[in-house]
Length: 435
Image (cartoon, rainbow, N blue to C red; front, side, top):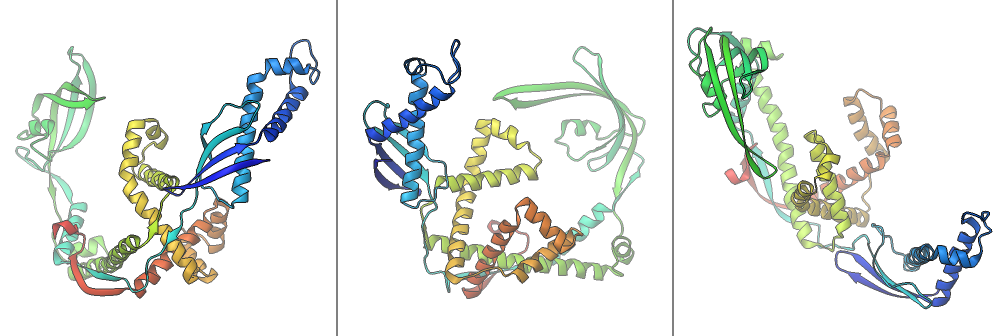
């Protein structure tokens, strides 16, 4: 195809093509389209392939012009991509098009390409060395959590108070006084005096009955609404939480530790192992932030959007949200995209930088390394390595897993070559802003 082109490298790794196809090529493609119509057109009174040309040109003129333009744009874009060795990561989109006539045909198209990564110095980066410390308070909190988990609810005499549980029957009534719902043996925690329903239960004893009116304001579709209901409750029991005594017997009952001190030691050791890995991860995060600042990458919107979509999909999966339903709510989905964007930009830059360093340093994951990693995961899933590996190959996830391991290995390389300064000690499981 005879054409002239003007290629412009726009920001965000976007390639802009201004293409003009000469009139001879336009006419040649138009004739091919007309020939196709002549062979396949069906009209009343004519057999397939026997419709006269003048009728084809009259009845299908708009279709012919449309398909001619589409073919010209498709073929000429592919020609330019091949000639200039581009590897688009987005579908080429036509942003401007002249009307197709008897002369030349001009249009403008755009597509994104993988960005060039200009690496800064990545060896010997200076950084703080973070060190998370496990406090006795953290261990004690875990012990208290275990006590709460193994607490019992015991019936008590007298009036209920905040923190107690009440077992009750209730009947809910509509505004007209008709019975709406009836429930029996419902256990309710009186967790706060601020809760309207719970506050009405404070002070009640076994056998007490009470009529309770509840009203609550809420917002729906930008409008304030009010929910009102009335109930009749009958208290069948009042229970209080009883925590197990903190002694060696408690340790034996909930674990295979023989003493309370042994249980505490095991908890501490578990936290210290987590804290050590978190210390390394936090230091790597700072190293990566500094490396990102040293590198130049003109990120295409296609990659940012792809990573933002992955982040949102993970959020939806974690919170059991209907992703398709979320996408249909354009305003809400746009808000999720906005919130995901900073992480999407950082993640994309990190992957591109690590990938470039891996190529430069010839960092690869050997088969033995891959199999060792997969074997550990397979074991936790109670599968053999061969079975697990085959499943990943069938799902098409094995190469991505290998890629992630390569990125991890590359980040380890940066960490090992870094110049780490004085340790910055931080209480484990405490937000840095609370220091």
